Image 1 (tube, rainbow, N blue to C red):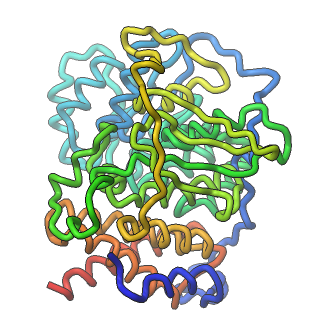
Image 2: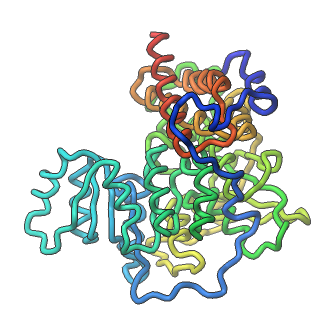
Image 3: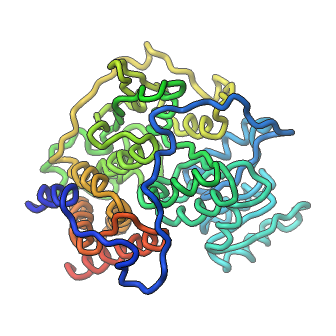
Length: 448
């Protein structure tokens, strides 16, 4: 549990708080202000009367091809080659898997994290008849994101590292299949106006926001009243709070329902993933924080719900499989027929009971921190996310305990009040992302 200052911090973030604008910045760089952002989908999604016509499959660039989102995206492409094609890939350091992906999907452009990986990759691709162009580093990811021979970009990179290439893709006019939470959580005040300027659609690829997006299809203006985000409860949903003092990394990674990456699985255990999704839902759909609720739903069958103005509730249901929201974001506004063999249909009898619980704030203190940061807005949401990412990394490396994760996040948010920026520029978003990571690193080292 958090310190006694936690509730006070939440109150301070949500009400009176120190703030700066770009003209007061301590850095000499001239920054460009962005207006208060309009949501990507303001409570409704209108299907275009005419969809783009193209010869052949829809083309994608894929950021993070060897991660969880990336590999599942490529499974979809492999199953539906008549519908989808990947023309550009970026990956980290898993050269062995990347080379297999290149040989199978034959992209024209590839990027790896480190230049040292390029010789090994070229060696593994020796003899390939149509060798792709190979780049590296941040510049390489940006080039993949904005590659000319694509219609859209799937952003499967974890963390604020996904922000720069997403901005590049938007500036190149590519629709965004958004699987990177930080793009909006940290960069919403900058990214949303940019997408509007370039006529780019931001299509949510995570299960909860995809569910909401599906529920608001065809709603009339002002038809959405409330968003209800469902949460599995993570690895510790059935634990008493006292047991959390001794849980291990291995314990936190035992998700009861979903198969995901290590960081997001820990976020599910702390429920920070849901707190971040609250902020993302605010930016995506324009709901106020008072009208976004979280409910524990252990079966993970209902992926989220929308209450309409007349108090009806719309829900999207399905087995817990990330490929469903991914394929929807890739195919929208169309739907792709999927085989029962690889996409099991929902069996209501087999599914059994659906149950719901109120989240325990003592077990999940992340919720209050996330709502408070969201209400504060500005750079506070990015600091929350970056501090959490760094703290989770320390936990996974067994440098801090499980309960220390939220203590570090709280400390970073508390310290950031002195430098809070209400309407940040792109440069300030990047600066305070790094500031939060450095703060957690120094704070942890100081306590050793």
